[in-house]
Image 1 (cartoon, helix red, strand yellow):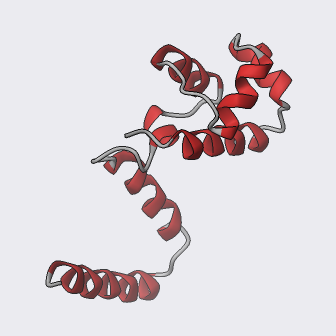
Image 2 (cartoon, rainbow, N blue to C red; image 1 turned 90 degrees about the vertical axis):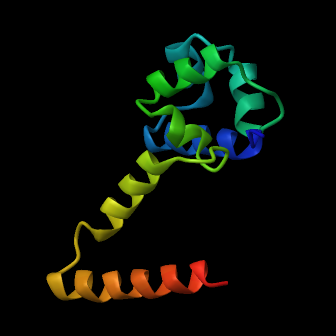
Length: 110
């Protein structure tokens, strides 16, 4: 099931990162400004064409927008992990890999 509130929050966050108002996003995407407001509040369902249009306008991927609603979304997860690890030293990477291995073992042996 799609979490329209979370999708709207992600769209809003991406719009704000670009410094755009709702009116500017509406103009660039061809979506009515009132519809943008409803989408960002999760007050409406949005069609796949509208979702694709907004993703393209915001230079985002669909999985970025619907992340959390997907059963498998490794693309976005991998990118998040890559960003988190990008500035780590080799010692930090070694320590974090041990933490991940341990945590994974704990989670799988519930």
